[in-house]
Length: 242
Image (cartoon, rainbow, N blue to C red; front, top):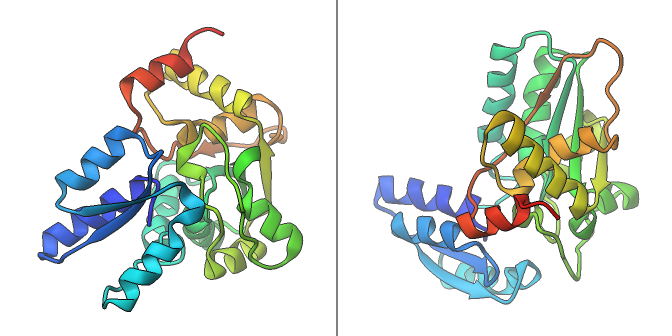
C-alpha cells in the first residue's frame, strides 16, 4: 500500500524479477505516481483515502499475496541514504528528514547514529498527518482516523512497529508543521535551489525556515528532499504567489 512512491518502487522491483504485484493506493494519489506505478507493470486498486488501504491489503494477503510493508520493510534500503549523506558530509551534525510511517527516518537514523554518534536526527511531519508524533507521545503505534495535508507523501495513517522502536531510540525529535510552512519550503527550494520536489520532500527545509527545527551555532546540516513526484499543474499552483 502506498501514496505513490513506495508503490512505484515495489512495482519496479517486481517487474525486474517477473513477479506479480498489486499496489493499493488512495484515490487522491497524484496522477504522476499512479502512471509511474502502472508503467512498471503493477495492478492498482484504489481506496477512498490512506486510512482505508489496509482492509484491501488484508484481502490480498488472504488470497495468497505477500505484503511488502511500506515502513518496516524499507528500513534496510533507506539506511543507504544515511550512508550516502555521510559520504558527502562526514562531519554532519544534524540530519532533517520528512516523516510519514517512519521507514525513511528509521533507516537513516540507524546508519547515521552508528557512524556518527554525536549527530542529531530530527523528523518533520505535517500537522494533518502526524501519526509518528502522536505515536511517540502515546508510546505505542497510533492509527489516525483522518489525514489532511498537501504533503501526500507523508499521509501514512499509522507507523511501523519496528520503525517506531528505532525512532524512539535514535531520533532526537519529530516536529510538526502546518501546510503553509510546507508550501513556503516548496517555493524556497524551487526559487533558490532550482529543484522540483513534492510537498513531502520540502518538509525538512520548511521546518528549518519556520524555526520548528532549531540549528545550533556551527552545526553542519543535511536535509533530505524525499521525492519529486508531483503533477506539473499542482506544482505550479503550490509555488505560485499567494
